[in-house]
Image (cartoon, rainbow, N blue to C red; front, side, top):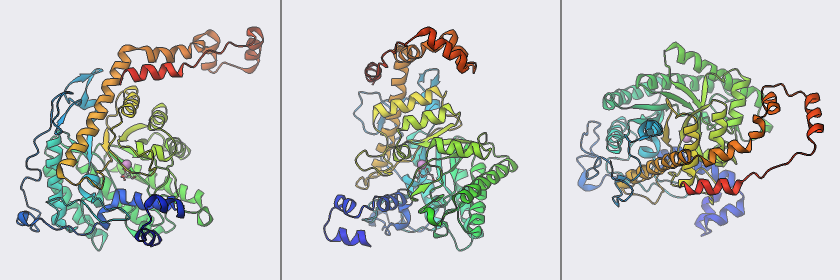
Length: 495
Ligand code: XUL
Ligand code: CO
């Protein structure tokens, strides 16, 4: 209300941000929008010329993207926006096809439920297949659009939340029935080639989750969240999903004054233990993934970053049951680079999946933009290559069009651009590896530890008495240059 009044008075957003210091509030609103702009979208109307296609029928089987061809690789000199310039699915790089390195997927929620609404304005997308409702028929029609999109883009993986593919109903039983109907259609449309990279339960949009799901102060909410995750695990398994994600958007607190943090964390661990047990019970062999994020919508989310999540998993004996889904925009929100988060996950054996997106350095919140920075993409791919790939994980484009991008073809252009950027990153990593000088620089930097004493230290045999003797024998150590500028020069030369 305050924000709206100020905005209506003609104060620009920057001013609002400065005056009200509600960066947190703004962040909260924008984050909510990032994943759930669908519910605050104002109804859309069908264009008059498409009225038959917009009729309330889930069985509409027309072409959703007429005029958009199957996207092909045309090489770097192509000027065709609807072609890949760098991503050549079957080309082999560093011993694997690009397709196997990348394992790209389409995020259903941004691509098919993102309306362009933000806290200050209503929906801007007016996709011709939308009828402005959240009906079951509309959910099915959207699912058909999803699979035409996936096929034309040439990927075979997708990601979803239970509630963005099927509407909520009055009771959990009816909601599950809705989900079953849409999932049955999705299964049919998937055919034999397509399946989910991951599925997840949306435990943040509905008001019942205002205090969290697994960390809610209400046991009834905990039970409801458990029932929802149970069902989401089942449908992910049924669809052949390879992973299952836990993003705890509301698993955190707004103030510690009313929060028993220790008890909430214990509850979260019990919840995840039960998820592991159920996954095993139904024979779901997919990887369970925790997606760290520091805040938005809560002031403090318990899965703050990769290190915090790893510590939580270790403390509760869950470290072997989970991996991490690192999202680049979440990394920067937590004050780290994406590369830092990926490396933290990797060196702990926890790098499972990447939500490929980026934030805006000037804006600062979770803007969920498609990653188009080649240097950033090269660092991301350095971690992926060092990890030996991500399978059974992959890349999920947790990214959305800007509010002002309103053409259907923009959906394709955004994905093509994101895929090409990461493919270019992979090509750059191949150049760096082939050249070898960056690896060499790092190897030389630590070569003193290749000595007898260094090896003893690394083997856990560097006791203080022995080291004191050595320090006295060696005298003042000679400390060499770190060669940061040279490292940056070598890195840049591969871009
Ligand atoms: C929110 C976010 C989610 C998760 C899935 O910031 O990234 O979309 O990826 O719930
Ligand atoms: Co994400």
